[in-house]
Amino acid sequence: MIFVGIFNMLVRMKINVERAWANISVLLKQRFDEIPNLVKVCEGYMKYESGVLERVTLARTSFLSATTPKEAAGANNMLSGALKSLFAVSENYPTLKADGTFLHLQDRISGVETDIASRREYYNSAVADYNTKIAQIPYVLFAGPMGYSAKELFEAEAEAKNAPDIKFNMPS
Image 1 (cartoon, rainbow, N blue to C red):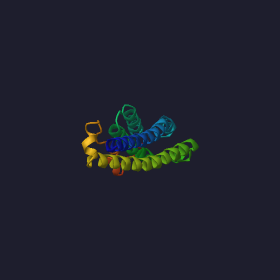
Image 2 (cartoon, one colour):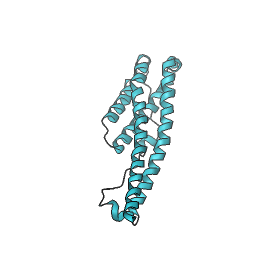
Image 3 (spheres, helix red, strand yellow):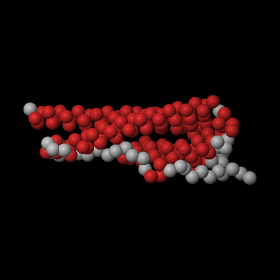
């Protein structure tokens, strides 16, 4: 009976971590699906800021090739930094800032960013609970042999925590 209880607890916690990651994955995909539309709107206005748009596109491509939560987190951090730069540079283009499509996309992406932060907190909590449980006695005695191993947290990288360095490339 003890073995069954331990087994069921580990299964329940592992599924909770997987569900939490699936929720983040859906939000990341929503945000990444909006990026081509945002870039398309910005291209017409930001003729002199191709480097910013290229960083956004590169970050999106990195996400599409991510296969693990750690790789997805890295791509997410790269995109967050690129979007911060894009939105900061957009301040220099009043007509872009007034464009309804741009404002709608900016609001949608900002809303998804907020949702991702919330879900990341839940995911990290579920991972911390899971990792703690599989390291405690008596679970540690069963977790390893049953194939349960520690999961990685979804963390912001150091450069994602800092404000972006913005350089305007406007013609004189």
